[in-house]
Each structure stands twice: as structure tokens, then as C-alpha cells.
Amino acid sequence: MLPDLHHGMNIDKSLDDNARSRFVMTLRGYVLNDVANQMRDTYEREVAPQAASNMTGANLDGDDVHDALLDEPIFKFYSSIRYNAQEMCHRAVIPAIDREHDNLKARAEALDGTPTRTGSLTLDPSLDVPNYVEGIDVHLMPGSYVTGEAEGDLRAGSIYDNAISVFAFGQMGDQMDDIGQSMSKFVRHIYPDFNPQKILDVGCTIGHNTLPWAQEYPDADVHAVDVAAPLLRYAHARAQSMAVPVHFHQQSGEALQFEDESFDVVFSSMFLHELPRAAIKNFMKEVHRVLRPGGLLLNMELPPNNHMHAYDQFFLDWDSHYNNEPFYKNFRDMDSKALCAEAGFETSTFFDAAVPQYTLISPERFEELLVLNPDAETLGKTGVLARDTCHRYAFGAWK
Ligand SMILES: C[S@@+](CC[C@H](N)C(=O)[O-])C[C@H]1O[C@@H](n2cnc3c(N)ncnc32)[C@H](O)[C@@H]1O
View 1 (cartoon, rainbow, N blue to C red):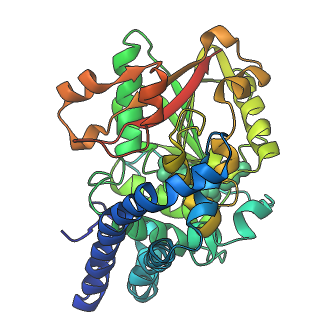
View 2 (view 1 turned 180 degrees about the vertical axis):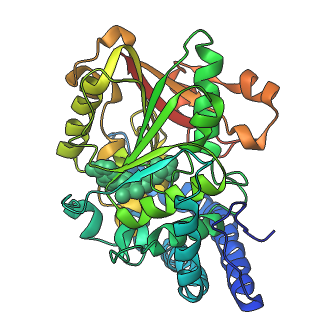
């Protein structure tokens, strides 16, 4: 299957572009299935017994598994293919985006002026983009989220959208919005009487997981923030082309420009693990400030390490070492409940959840598989592909 975008910011791709994308998708499938399984077998058969005997009775964790595998040829093979496949997700799509960029800009301008669409874009050229965003090529994306800071440039948004559709090989829904759909449906199902009127998504990137909130709660006023202007220009054009009203703002989640007690929901997805510890704490305090009493914080994130098998800890934390995600493991080692409490949320309102992928299964099966406050065993399996879906980890609290 070829990754095509189903909205008005799609780009024309040549046969060569498509061949590159198809090759990278296949390579990722190979490394994440065949090679990964072989690495796990090698670990269990040859490495684990040896590692455990060297540890004189201590429990192994992900770091120990990583240390024990470092010199194994299968680990080097896996790591080099995965690293290169990750770079290739971007390289596969960039030539088409370079060719089409003027056309994309023209389309974005026309969509901005479309009077029947009611979303908006507010940029702040004076915002200091944090070094943890522009100082490294986050998950090996060339130029990070800020490629093309020139007026009107939306290259980074298009690279992200097209590369993630290669990266996901069909696992994220037609609009790459499975997380947003799953999380908004989760809230609707678990809290049927909750009727939010104002919703905020922080670290929204191209708004792919923001729009499902506006679709699930069409009466709500939906806002989204990110620090990167090229992403937001693209996010706004994409949303306008789909006629979904969202207000995009260039702001930092560490210092939101919204009034106290002004939102019913603050949502984030795959955001916290890209922040250093101090920034996570600043964000959580800001969430507590802008939520109304009775409001909901919901973070969809990587699963915590504490209930996970040592091998799974190592497998997920690979990105922290080799995928330019320096804060990834740091976040996974944190305690979600303590984070909420420190930000001012009552401990009794804390919850976590294992949420299946809505776009991969039927609505009935989604409701059947959802788990609020999962036990340690279920928590330990979040983030790992099971029979027909992967359960994603989410946590939050009520103000
Ligand atoms: C991995 S992406 C999040 C992806 C998206 N929410 C999703 O569901 O796939 C992290 C995003 O957070 C943004 N970001 C990083 N630091 C930020 C901050 N302090 N405030 C707002 N956005 C930030 C980045 O620019 C990037 O777009």
C-alpha cells in the first residue's frame, strides 16, 4: 500500500518517489519484525543467561540488556538498519516536497483566505524556539521541526506528514490521526457525561491528532499550540482543507498565553518524551493553571518503564540512544502520578489507561479492549503490538 495523504495538502509523487517510499516501508517492516524477532531470540537463548549470571542476583533492567547486547552482531545489524530506515523515511519524501513547495505555499495561502472555513493561525515571530527543538534533528528529521523559517515556508510540516505516513506503514489511520481518534473516543466512552466546551492540544505538530477532538466534540472551541511556525502553517492549511475548525497558535507549552481556568481539556500526545525534565514540569504547572475546576488533563505517551520486562524496556529505549530522542528514556523512567501531584492535581483524581487503536478495530472491539487503571501486567504490555491492536499508554488527572 502506498502512503497517500487524504487532504488538500497532498503532493504529486513520481514513480521514483513512490518506489522509494515503498522500499523504506518494506525495510522498516523487515527490521521491526524479522530482525527484531531474531534479536530477541538471540538475547533469550544466548545473552540473557550469561547477563543474569554476571549480575549476581540483581534484577536486570533495560540498560543491562542494552549493555549485554552491545557487541552482538545481531544488535549491530538491527541498529544500523533501523537507523538508516529512519533517515530514509525523510529522504524518500523530501525531493517531491522540494519540487512542490511553491505550489503548497500557494494552496496554503488560498486556504487561509477561504471565508467558509473557520479555523485560524496566530504566529509569534518573537517566540524563542527552545534549544531542545531546534538544537538537534529530533528523531533524525533533517532540520528538526523548524526547517524553513522563511515567511510562508511549510516544508517541515509537509516532511513530517509525508514521512510519518511512510514510517507508520498503515498503522496510524488514513489521516495519521489514530492517536487523536482513540484518545477522544476513549474520553467520550469512559466519561459520557463530560461535555467539554474548550479543548487545547499542546505540541500539536501538524494537528493530525488535534482534529479528531473537533470532530468528536463539534460544539467545542478547539485550540492547538506548537513552537514551530513551519509546522503550524501546514497544520492550519491542512485543517482548512478538511474544513475542520481549529485555532493554531505559536506558543510554548512551558509558558502558555491563555488565561487561568480557561480550558475543559488539555491534551498532549507523544509530546512529553521530547522535553527535558524541567520543561515537563513547567508544562504540567501550566496545564494546572489553564484548566477550569472540573477540567481534564490527558497525556498520551510512551509507556513507563517500571512495569515492563527488561527486554521490552531496552527495545523501546533504543530510540533514546540511536534515534536523536535524548529525553525519551528519562521520561519513561518518571512516575506519572508524582508528576501530576507535583503540578497541583489531587492524587485521588489520577488515572492511567491502556487504549487500543481505534482505526484498526471495530468500535465495539475498541470499547471491549479499553482498560481504565490497568493492572501492572496490562501496563507492562502497553506500547507492544498484540493480536489485533497495540494498547497505547495514557495518563491524566482531573482538576
Ligand atoms: C513528537 S511531536 C508531537 C506529535 C503530535 N502531538 C502527535 O500526536 O503525533 C512533538 C512536538 O512538540 C513540539 N514542541 C516541543 N517543545 C514544545 C514546547 N515547549 N511547546 C510547544 N510545542 C513544543 C515540537 O515542535 C513537535 O511538534
